[in-house]
Image (cartoon, rainbow, N blue to C red):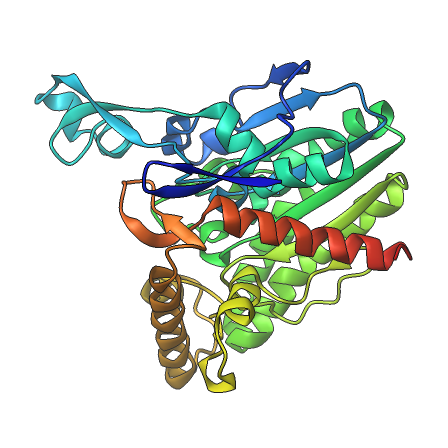
Length: 355
């Protein structure tokens, strides 16, 4: 691997382009579109890079796995629609910027797919690459993406490395700007378990509620790993803490991405970062989910959120910038993706007994 200086920016430049001499297949739309029309903003969210290999790295997640901010800006167009279309809630945040002008998302696909951590892993492990990641989606729709593709992957490859991200729980509870009504009213077994948990939330402490919520995913991933024995599962979190569920038959990366970055960049123990169990939407959570919520617990979680955001905003080399063009925000840079790929690979090799 080499670094290449482009202008004033140091950009990770891979020596092998994983897209060269590959067959590229894309699926559209992702299931998340049924609960979040805004997901249509994000191109190339389900991609298979067929390099003719017998093994495949398959990544499932949201913006941190997609490679958000990695030369994928929103670009204002010349046309400006000031009428009723702009006022429509769904259209306003999906197709128009704050100036009321139509915007598109420009995706440097080659750069992003080579430099997100899935692309880095693909290069390191010399595999094919499957990718099902949508910025902003919750863990439920991430799981649906896995369930809709694992049979095809398992039957096509000798071995599949499933890299599965769990993200902020608020996205699964209908308390954010998403509208997951088609899922919350579905009869899908996983969703029904979440619905039942929410119905009895008033009998649970908040910490117990989150643990049981996370356990639903842990149990489902165990079922899938047992059903597809040639698939090896790795689970990880980016900026919200583990809730205490027991993950079996999978490799659990106990360090959060944000904690791992902190360990690489901070020297004093007291400077270590502690992530909240959930980011934002705490007022909606208290009013809608109605667990036996301790006010001090909520205040502590909000403070942890603020501290973690300050940390992410302070590291320009690890957190390159946000999707609106501001630097020093919370999406990982190519360097951040590379070190995370190396950390995932280390866990896989240690688990498999490889030096």
